[in-house]
Amino acid sequence: MSRRRFYVPGDSIHEGTAVLPPDQAHHLRHVLRLQDGENVELFDGKGAGYSGRVSYRGDEVHIKDLRKISPPENPDGGLVLAQALLKADKFEWVLQKATELGVREFVPLETRFCDVRIPESRMHGRMERWQRIVREAARQSCRFSVPEICPPISPARLLCSKKFAAHKGLFLYENAPGRWNGTLRPAENCVLCVGPEGGWHPDEAEAAANAGFELFNLGPRILRAETAALAAVTLVQFQTANCEL
Image (cartoon, rainbow, N blue to C red):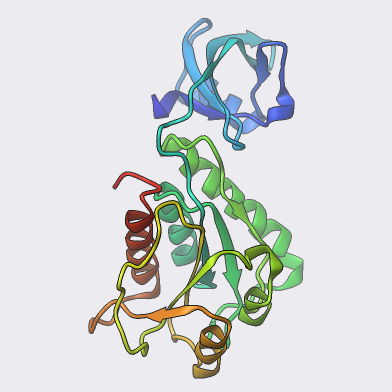
């Protein structure tokens, strides 16, 4: 049903009928070419899902006779991925795949060795593009929620953030003395930090350790940053049993 699954903001649902956003309406009408009365699924990105029937109203596409869909038995968990900025295509790939794996929230990091810096004039457009990517990945993977994406911040700001104070901190560091040991409780909220292509500066790793983050590595192989991110996300999600792999 994922091809017939569409995102609709919660404020576009009224009295059992939803009005699809223009991009979703275009996809339904002109790409999938669904007919009036065909069944589709919707999700609002906040945890609610619906089924209903297509109804064309001029240029608008309405989904009527909405019925709520029960959420999955294994809802999206509490993993926050703090990923250092990468080149555009690689960073977007991490956003897409980590959304499919159930990451709850993304925090882009501007680290010491980042090769990427996003000018303020381009930030709004970049954030909108990132949101479209995670929304589509949520649709495709049959998630009911869409991950939040924060504006890029420094590692220092992340480490002192009250928002994540109660989360377990994990810091993937190529020079860490030990490998992953899997010491997580089921459904535990975590912040997982992954560095850029150039790795972490030793001062950043030291600051993370001083803030109580657990430093670990993934073994002797040298992984690309995007590969390391997805490998670490998979390990954490498996340990906390927040998604079925």
